[in-house]
Length: 89
Figure 1 (cartoon, rainbow, N blue to C red):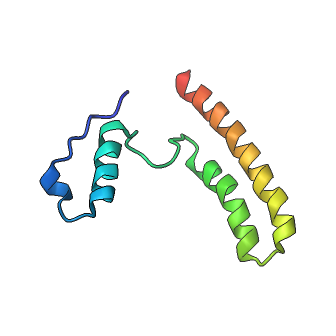
Figure 2: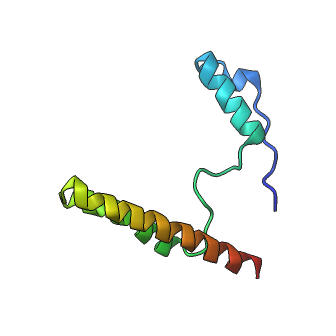
């Protein structure tokens, strides 16, 4: 299902700086209507994405965190493929 087309009136954007207003107008015209991947298994996606954040919060040195980020990124990419297949079935 395609998202509804959003119309942004110039008076709605009058209080914003011109460059930002233009970016908002274009985004409303061409954007997807959401700012993150739409997934069915929200909890699993949150766990994958949050793993590097938790490592950083726990104060793990930067060097060991990089593999955690790389692994989480690869796992999340695989997850999105599987989740999209599930949507299509």
